[in-house]
Image (cartoon, rainbow, N blue to C red):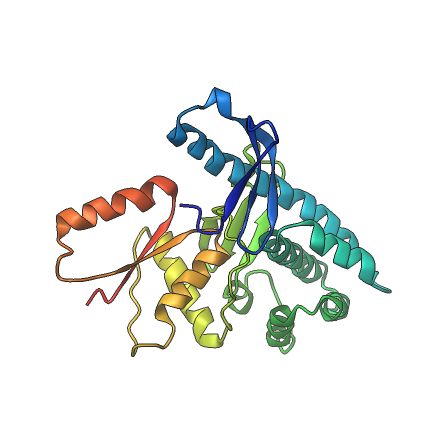
Amino acid sequence: MFAGLLTLIIDQDLTRIEKVCSREGEEIPFLTPIILKDSPKINNWLSKVESQMKVSLAKLLCIAVDGLSTFYTENDHLDKNRFLEWVNTFPAQLVVMAVQVVWTKTVEQALQLGISFEGPLQIVLRTLDVLALVFLGELQPVMRPKLSRFERLYHMQFYLDVSVAISTERLSIHIANAVLPYGFEYLGVPDRLVQTPLTDQCYLTLTQALHGQLGGSYFDPAGTGKTESVKALGVQLGRFVLVFCSGETFDFQAMGRIFAGPFQVGAWGCFDKAN
């Protein structure tokens, strides 16, 4: 549990948990601090830490998206200081997610209105969104781009519906015909994988398997990035990925005990060397 957390921040009276802190030094304030006297048992307040972490991230994401949207409407110039202030206000995980949510919305508006991609491209250039530039470069040769074209559905789209009552269910990720909920597991500032066309194909394959309530299995020589690709997809979807090194002692009883843990916390299990 809590792979992205280093410590809990408690008030001076040692009566309530107010924040969590990552190993990189990021602090996530709880919108509703946890009163320790109400939950004296460790398993009770640990469960509340997990719940409050996800709820706080979900609500902070809505605030981050609102703040970023103002920059995407400034076509003439980007106030560098204001933008950096916005970046420093939120956790890196939410900064990346907010950019992806607003980018999805901006591209869809351009497609629906039939306008040029020049406006969104200028925004991307100002915010150095390299992957989005590549995506638009693939769409430009199409004579009549549509929302339903596979060239677009092939990539992840991020949708935030603030009308949903439960804050942790507001963000969903669409890829092809798969719709997956974001996990809101706080992951700190993980190292990012260099994304290639093969990575996109792997993401598409695994998300289709998840959509069909199945698992996935990569085959390739050792050291080519199979496990790291699964972990990177988990980061994209806000899921904690537990990696297990398989062996001959992994019988059905051992597997049952292993499955019980990730299933309870909504994490993924990645079984290395399963063959």
